[in-house]
Length: 324
Image (cartoon, rainbow, N blue to C red; front, side, top):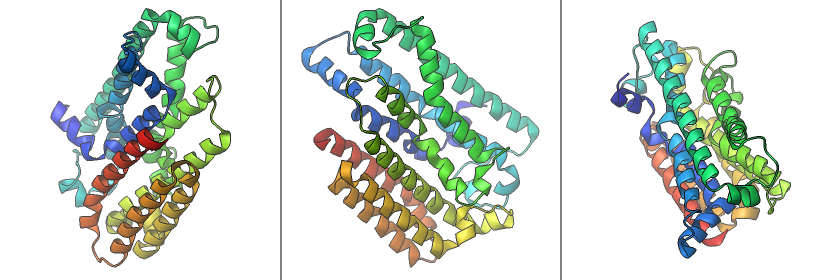
């Protein structure tokens, strides 16, 4: 398929849903501190950390989103015909077997190709600064750097790849199961939290398990609320296609109440770490839920929702840099 078609299918307006959690992970970790030291003291060998970070983050633009939304479009051919949003606001692919096979090939090529390139480049950089890596970043014996990198990449990405696939596709097709569809939106935070858990086993500055659990649940509840809210405009076409999402099961008004509760829980759980920012985020999301509750057609608000999320992600990014 052409690059323009793949770009449209990957929904660039939603890229930050999976990109920003990774960026938040980097900015709140020792990794970002190393990069800052590199520029402040001109340690050129550690500037390679910046290159590694950019390579990893770039995966969560087109390739990762093509895996999420391309798979969704392939699996939803029988339901998208009822959804007018697919023809205008989002992307609608030809439901033919040929088009689906071409899209599948493109998805595999972009993802496998990028992961291999990522692994090889990171391996080369780590080989270049082997002494630093051995002493500071991975202070345990290893059979070979490339093997360790491959294992690390597979573990950190596997949860994302598996949950993204099972959300749309069989055998689980979680998007057709109320409440499970929201839980499977763990896919947006899967990789950063996988990395945090792996690093916590070997870092010289371990994070409290309680803090990890609280922030994981806060992020998960936020993802569940975001998913349910995004599914509200699709209630009617989903009912026509006999697709029972959480929003279909609860109905519009109850779905908005459910989202409000999830955002409140997210704010409470993240408060010990983020303090006043948790309250600010809860106020912003609650305002959207209240406006939506009294608006008959929320599609106009729904179209603003990605930009509201982007603003909150940016504010969180700044908050962590300044206060955490």
